[in-house]
Length: 411
Image 1 (cartoon, rainbow, N blue to C red):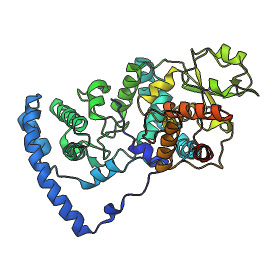
Image 2: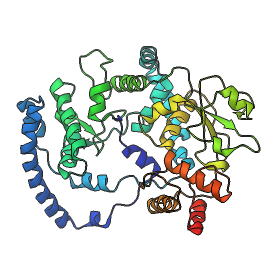
Image 3: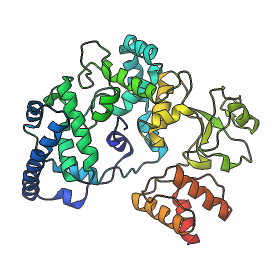
Image 4: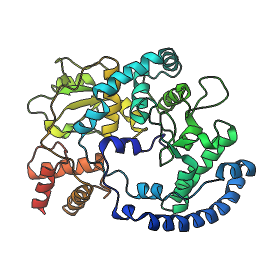
């Protein structure tokens, strides 16, 4: 279970407008809220017995759930979340802005002793931990103000993902039972992600640590040390390799075979150099292990040689934009250079409906995307690449509006 939800990423990328029903009159909204709240209270009565059977003390449950009410806004956000409307380059303007870099350097300086000890203990570079902190909560300044118990109870009662949110709610109760925090301090995002680095309760249970030695794993308070150490512990658990970059910006040679720009194609930096793929200084990338080539903006955008640490950051959030944002922000905090190559800034991001259309049309043409989910991940990229190859286009796997027009024409 990932420690973070995508609410913070959605805020950075931009989300679609709330649906029309979210603009209903106050009276109508209040009536709907009251009706659903009665249902929630009935559901909580049944959930109480399941929680006690699962090991939650009845007194802990009753104290935690006192005052929990149905939150209609949480349900609306869950059902209408994440229609990202920004391109990778627009996202990076925010994620790695000059201000965010400067604040990251200051956050590192202000917490240097703790971060150096965390790096020594877990083998995760302090700049990476700070970058995640920066993207998840703007270095602790935006940790979320929603009542996590209310959010999780509302989402579990709603039923769309009941098993998932019931499990998260049980873990939230276990956190309270362990004494790590109090119900009124358990604040976070509308989806239940908590604290400086936005852990879901299940990930807190598995990976949070008491770095300060006060017998509590406090990721909510003003002191960020437990949260930062927990983030490092999480990354270590999933195989972080100290000293290995997440990725390196590279140059591609004239005549590069774009079918090689595939996450499944792994080569050593020496082997990539033999094919003409070198860093921006024209030298062979350091030997950090097997790597693949990523083209988040297609053949007209920046190219990256990515290593296994890229996949470790994906455990936090699977979006390429997020992983590149964390990686590049950490590089800049450490004094690295901006991305040097240009982006296809004439393009706009595909809308949700356009992404669904692209996947549907590709699959109908025989280029199966496997899922019709509006997510342009490796499966859809590979389908795009197969279509491009079949049609005689440059097979860079880039899902643009121009590509969608070509798919429409082919159908």
